[in-house]
Image 1 (cartoon, rainbow, N blue to C red):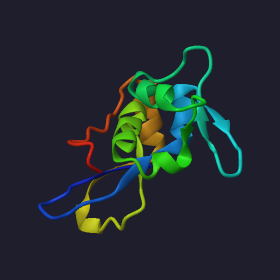
Image 2: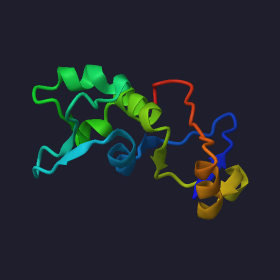
Image 3: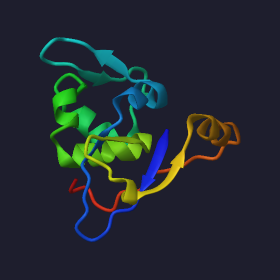
Image 4: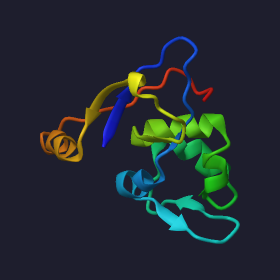
Length: 123
């Protein structure tokens, strides 16, 4: 389900990258190593917006801890997949539109793509 929300004045939500979308949208692989879990890519499939983070990493992995703590990485990761996860309370009066799964699939089948545009990387 996709929910469009309205943020007024002092309203704020904290957005995090949608981790499952990294696998489906960017062909990421999961490095599952107890303390150092993250995503990596093979064969030049690295997302362009994340190249600087991948290149800065000693082993080419973007770690899950960084994906929830580094504001600029969070912003670029969300821009990469155009999806995010929100763990805050979304009050009913903030909801502008709800798109149900079957409607969302119809949009995808018609090659229409919804995009999430964030105004600043200071999440």
